[in-house]
Length: 301
Length: 281
Image (cartoon, rainbow over all chains, first blue to last red):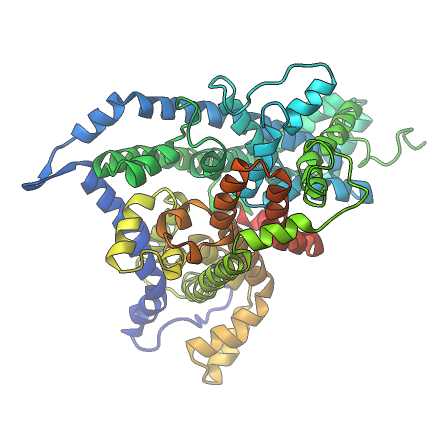
């Protein structure tokens, strides 16, 4: 954003001030970033390629990674996280689109429903998990109780290895769809009215207008929200702690929970570091993907 | 030209079936909250726990018991201290860095800004294993500052403040400089007062995300009396689950969720705008 005026108000009057002031003002941030963003990356790379033995620390190359990928629990966690990402991102975005389409515009009922869909975003993920603990409770729980009244058989939603990941996924969709709805609503407002009017005058029906006008216009929004949703699928695992602790038989073990277990319960620093490196690589890949598609922070506003 | 039969153009843009489906889904979305309210105010053992009909004789007994059986007031204070501490430091670091990236010219500015943005990807929670070692080395294990420090620098806040500082007219700063105002006076007297909406937006997003945070405090905090609300609720829930005390869990969850839910319902528009800006958090 070049200023039109010839004067450069921030130009230094003394040459040394040119670097001194910016660095001084950035230093509080840089100290914290160095300690908790840059240094941990170096440390985790070091830990992942070294083994601590009684005779000291020794470079072991990729041994920790070999052991990591040989661990069936880790492979399960990778697969679980991929399924979980797919199972949360696609339905969340489809629902968010439906919510946004139906609730875009003025009116009290619409405003009320928008607020309702957004409420789950405001509560802690552990609070949502505490509620869903009873929803998913076998037998007397909310879902089973009402299924039984309809004459349908319930299930042990969190205790059945085939269902537990699905149950966790349902909770996440409930929690996050309203957040993504917000961005799609903003995207809808940015579509010029003329585009819709032109389609309407051409005799396009609601479905045609959705398919040929609205959805193409929302493509950047979807790319952006999709990346946020994918990042959330990796970084938010609080509900696993309350609902399943990774079980039954590893069915809900997600990457970050696996890292937590290796570090806080098994005290295997090398394995935890290697798993962190793999997770960071995945996140970097996802972020790189979003930047490559021109959906970086600059485009977010 | 005759008006289209379906009314204003902006209204009928959505297939009718989607609108009915969304109305139905709104009911589904409300069920967990509705159950929470009904169960929290229901006398123990009056009807099935899963009943969605409100009790005719609502009681506060569950709240009293939840309040007594877990140290919620203390957890609440811990959460407030964590959120306030993080926010105060963040406001300082983000305003200073935002000013630098918005208005100062110097070699290496782009590179440094890129280094800041790296934090958007390397979210502290993923780095919990190495960060915990750093916290321990700094002597901050099992302390509230230990929960706060990884968040004291904020790429999102810096980005947001840079964007809004750029919209402040340069002429104002020029005039202040002529009057001899130093950089701190210019930030405090010109930039910050003119960018209040951005400061509010950032504060809402910051407080919400740290109020709701669980995994990092779980790693850092060991003593029960230093737990924030989320940790307190998790351990409270696990013990009440053993007793099948579902009304108690509903009451505890309600207590923990209430502050932010109430704030959201009162200041809806502000929250929504803040969260829209938070897409890059």
